[in-house]
Length: 132
Image (cartoon, rainbow, N blue to C red; front, side):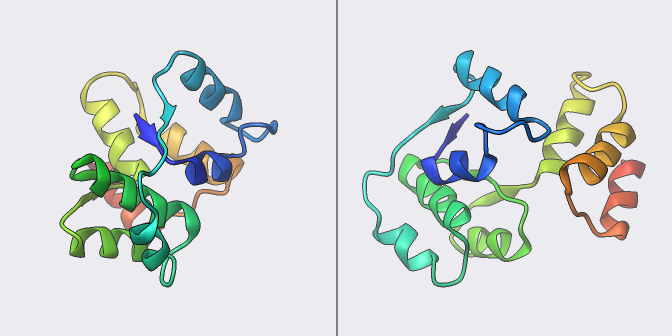
C-alpha cells in the first residue's frame, strides 16, 4: 500500500499511540510504503477544502491512476467521488478482512478503535457494519 508522506506524519508512528507499532512493522515489511507526489498542484488545490493528508492521498491516487483511495472523513470521500475515485474507509477495510477470514470478529476491533484510538463512526453506520 502506498501513502503520501503527509499521511505517514498523521499516523504518528514515532509515538506509542495504539497501532503505531503495527504501522512501523508494516513499513519494515514493506507492506506500507511512502510514495512522493510528482507534482503538488492538485494537492494544493484540494487543501482549500480538505486536510493535508486527505488532499495528498487523493492527489497520489490520481497520480498513480489508482481508483481506490483510503479515506474516512466524509468531505474527503465526497471530493474523491467527484474526482472519479472510489473511497474506501477503515470500516470497509475491516469488512473486507472479515470476508477474507483475516479477521475473526469485527465488533471487538471496532470497539477498540473507538475506545483506544478515538475512531469515530456514526452509530447508524457502526450498527450497519456489524450487521454485514
